[in-house]
Amino acid sequence: MARILIIDDDDTLRGIIAKSLTHAGHTVSQANNGRKGVALYRSAPTDLVITDLVMPEQEGMETIKILHQSFPTLPIIAMSGGLDGSPLYLDLTRRLGAMITLTKPFTLQQLKVAIDEIFAKNPPPPSAPPPAAGAEEKPAAGS
Image (cartoon, rainbow, N blue to C red; front, top):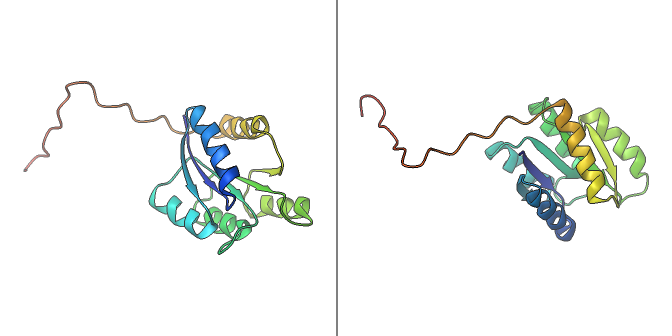
């Protein structure tokens, strides 16, 4: 399955999404604002980023812009519902690099459909298989 980063300052919503995606077999990392999310992505890249727009410290549009400029093929889902004009802001996020937008409140099924749509176009790379039982690491030549 995929590695997914969720960036949202709403701990409850972020936790619900993370639990649902983990249950579906994905590996999930989380950040509560855009600045932390970008730093986390740079240190541990994922196959998909799901980000809110309205957050403290660094809002979602700036986060999307930074991620898209540095990683232009990174799939991003933008979500929002906490501001007047959300549809306009969500439309702008597409121009900045978001592939799909979701208006809050949305269902976990709608999120699943969005993720499936992204991975149908951009499948995540296969996970590295775990080492075989009893396999030993060999020292590098010259060690």
